[in-house]
Amino acid sequence: MDEVKQLVTDIKNGIIKPIYFLMGEEPYYIDKISDFIEQNILSEEEKGFNQMVLYGRDVTIEDIVANAKRYPMMAERQVLIIKEAQDLSRTIEKLVDYASNPQLTTVLVVNYKYKKIDKRKALYKTIKKIGVVYESKKLYENQVGEWIRRVLSPKDYSITPKAAQMLVEFLGTDLSNINNELEKLQIILPKGSQITPELIEENIGINKDYNNFELRKAVGNKDVLKAQQIAKYFGDNPRSNPMVVTVSLLFNFFSQLLYYHGLNDKSSRSVASALRINPYFVNEYISAARNYPMKKVSQVISTLREFDVKSKGVGANAVPQGDLLKELLVRIMS
Image (cartoon, rainbow, N blue to C red; front, side, top):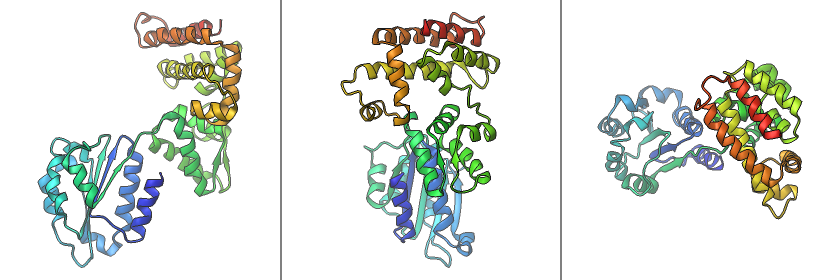
């Protein structure tokens, strides 16, 4: 995120490179940088003749080079944006000849999503010398909550840890989807508002009481009644709550719990750092560790592996997912 801010600041200050190669698994920042360049380098009057968007599936490297070598008309620069450039992955290295001697009045922006070029090869090394190669890496699940807070803070909004966790569990690590939902909330909420689980339930449709976050908490506390209530809700709404996701999240939780048992320093700060979790959730792990000694945690992980296979239809084709989940919870909490 800091690298993106610096890149944007440089462009605002007139430090503009001839090539921006934007690559990586996370498309959110690739789109953000590309959109910023598209909207800000040329004036509206200049864009008509000097800004072009091409798509990788429709062009060749030769087409890109031919357009990049054009001179701008009545402007200092032209901007050429190649979207979905990953469709050119088989021939992308051929761009090295242009990168070795780029047209300095052209700003070439290559959006190479979900992939990255080989850093050992000539194209990467050549662009690094004269332009920008930005790699947009996928965030881990435990990093997304902090990302949400950093996105909201400059806009004068905040979010509770539980609300952030709900978004991550419901939407995964897709930053574009999360940002879209956050923008919807910002439209209806006044600046200075705090986004709460209630607001998310009301406006996004994620149930604040019956979700994987609450199930994990109930299991950790050995709250059998609450866990079975959530299991029944999941069984009644299987499309919104696929068991394979629930099993995966529980597996991650107990894997972290096993790691917790092995820590020498069990202070809140040390636990949060070691498990890469928000300090707000540390007490849940402390409580769960009391209920699940290390030997039991190992047994639970083995049980979760067994039910992960069953949740995918192996050896349990005729068993409804809701019943399978109830059986799993009994095995875990017994």
